[in-house]
Length: 323
Image 1 (cartoon, rainbow, N blue to C red):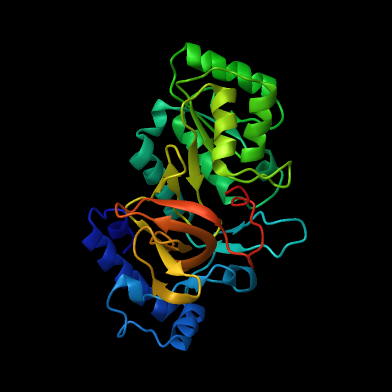
Image 2: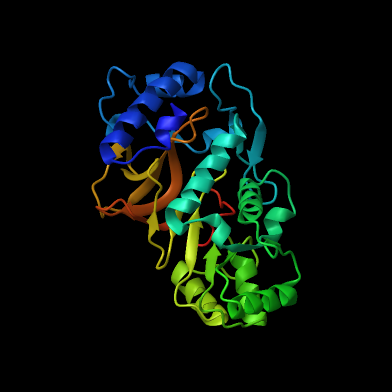
């Protein structure tokens, strides 16, 4: 089933695969089955993806969400806030995760070996169990560029390296948590117009929270680029969406965002309507592929989406405090 997921090439193929995954997870994930039964939904009554129940993301905090007969190879932990009850994602097969983010990068940016990958993720490197660090570390290794790597607090060295790569006309991606990129943009202004600067969200309580446009304006000036790219991912997912500017995200062919009514979670809203974000991540085959997040946003007819805020009752998440 997983091989078919990464070969999806049309909306019809996505819909059929999503229904197949729903049936599989209903039959093999007892917690998800109980959740669906309480909503009186099952494979016989679900005929289209809009009928599929989306499990609240908060379930990952208090339950081990994994299909029967599967054992975890690794457990990823959400960043959360100090003292918060963090989410745990029990991942049964790292190869699936690595294939998902590798193919996702290729889908949006091309051959990873064309890039030098630089990472500025201090808060993530300083804790255990980060799915983001695992992803970036793997992309760094796949790039095979001698200068690819992580930078913790050596910002001056990073600035010099970015200028050197710009001079060499080397394709470069700098991916960083928002507060670290912001601090660098203010303290070590560089002009690297050909580089890709990608923020992953998150101020982590380091200074004033900024709306995305305000943050991007500061970063554009600090790095001398026209647009700031963004990555949208979660500990509970195995796939990511990317924005190449203006906060408008696109999904891989095996991922889809839908918008639900905040007052009626079973009601899926039409395009351009504002509501809460539901995510279908078909790569998350042995966990739960249908997740109701605490983010707010809207989806457009072409499938792209934007994140506009957080639901009032949700706790602050490390990757989503900046929206």
